[in-house]
Every structure is written in structure tokens, then in C-alpha cells.
Image (cartoon, rainbow, N blue to C red; front, side, top):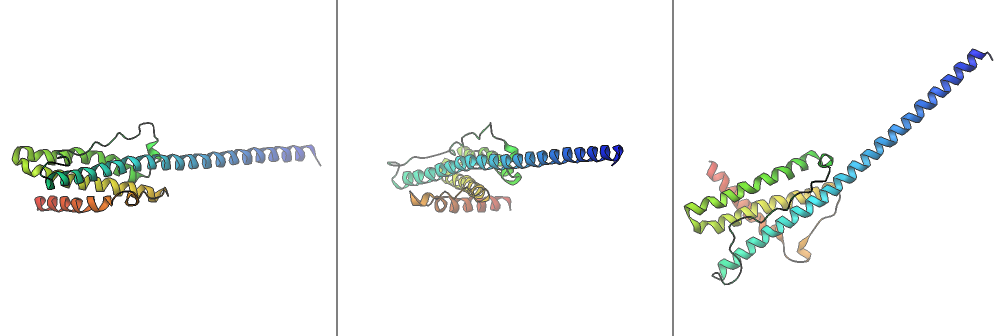
Length: 191
């Protein structure tokens, strides 16, 4: 074998080995980043789901407490005129890891709450006796939206369902009728 052939073969083999080694590194790095992004998305989704579920439970509790207040003539329960607070979302999380639909729904949901509180406050000046009904409807609407979003994230990221019916009561049966009633009233006003 000639020296030029040996050098060409050595150079080609070395070059191919370097390219192959670099490609394996890139594939390994891309796979690691994909796994990390999926893990980050699941972690953020479960944190958001728990926050939204707690908010929905608080909304349902407000509705039940207000019903008790009405039925007892004010001797039990509590009269509410605002929505419960939605705890802050995690700041340190990698929000870009979350599916765009869930990201948009979660971030947009925060805008629903001041609008719902304004709908309740509207009756402050007009007819104060309508405040409890409006508060119940807004709690039902916002609580149900939060509950559905939390459930959708749990399903999408395979996080397991949260079913409080086993421990307490059916929150959806408390929230959904008022959610539907609020949407019906909103569409009547728009017509």
C-alpha cells in the first residue's frame, strides 16, 4: 500500500469517527433536553393543577357557605361578595415547557377573576340583594373553569385524577350548574 493511500484512509477513518462521535453527543444531548422539558412540563402541570383545584374547592365552599347563610337566615354559613383568592402561580418554573394551549388557558384564567369580581361589584350600586346570586354564579363559573383546566392538564400529562368525591362531596355538581347559569345570563345580556 502506498503512503498516500494509507494517509487518505487514516484521515477518512479519523474524520468519520469524529463525526460519528459528535453526532452521538448531539443525539444524546437532544434526548436529555427533551426528557428534561417533559419532566419540567409535568412538574409545572401538577403544581398548577393543585393550585387550580384548591381554587375550585374554595369556590365550591363559598357557594355552600352562602347557601347555608341564606337557608339559615344568617345564623350559619357566610355571605360572600368576592371570589376566593387564587394563589400565585410558580415563578421559578419553566413555563415554556408547558403545552401552549395549557399555558394560554392558565395565564388567561387570571384575567377572568378581576372581570368576575367586577360583575359582582356591579350589583353593589344597583341592587345589593343580587350580590349573593351573582357571587355564586361567578364562583361557579370560575371554579368550574379552574377545575376543568386542572383535569385537562392531569389527563394530558398522565398525572392521575384528583377525585374529592371519595373524601367529601362532588365539587363539579356544585360548580357546573352555576357555571352554566352564568354563561346563559351572559349570552342573554349580549343578545
